[in-house]
Length: 250
Image 1: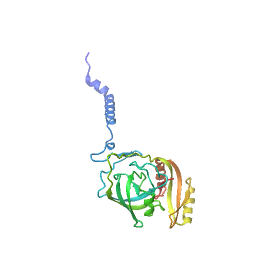
Image 2: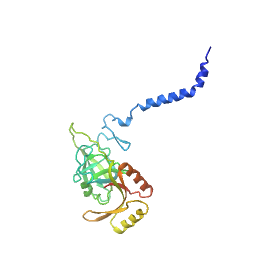
Image 3: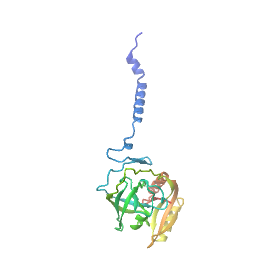
Image 4: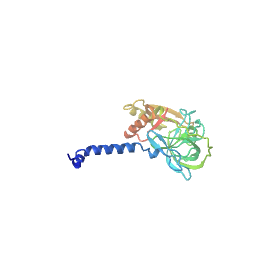
């Protein structure tokens, strides 16, 4: 009995296609992500909330403009990305890609005050921000009161590290987070915004901060227990028109 191979191929053609696609997908699935491998001459990349960040190999000529924020007592005493203990009273900062140990000058574009900090941590992993300053650094250039400021950062040097130094990953996801909508000198304006937010959102409240020469009334809303949920909440507030919103660790 003779078999027509052409008929057999036509009859089982869909099965061959499915099998071929399966084998291709399995083969592709075994390939490691190229993002997770360091490029030649570059430090090892790291991942936060599903996004990869590739630190640059050196800071020569680095200059950047964007939004600065600060972090204080809630992180005081905890490990930074380079293994040091965070001290909110020292002149340090967090940046996503600059080499750890880079010294940068931070210029507040709103008041022309500037200071110098050393990068010893990673972050900030919040939309629109380029640097997280220590409390002391933020205080010196007037960022503590409003919470954020438009800045320009310029790399001016690099700390020399020994071969035994280690990079310690930090879990930025845990904590208590709320959302700052605005900061006012006029308490009445702060109360008006809080009352408006209270009609739609939970935990609308005002926190008072005394910078020494002036009192700020910070209007905040909402509460989350992890930063990934906070990022989604912040997107919702931005969509509702509160474009100056940013996440705050309490």
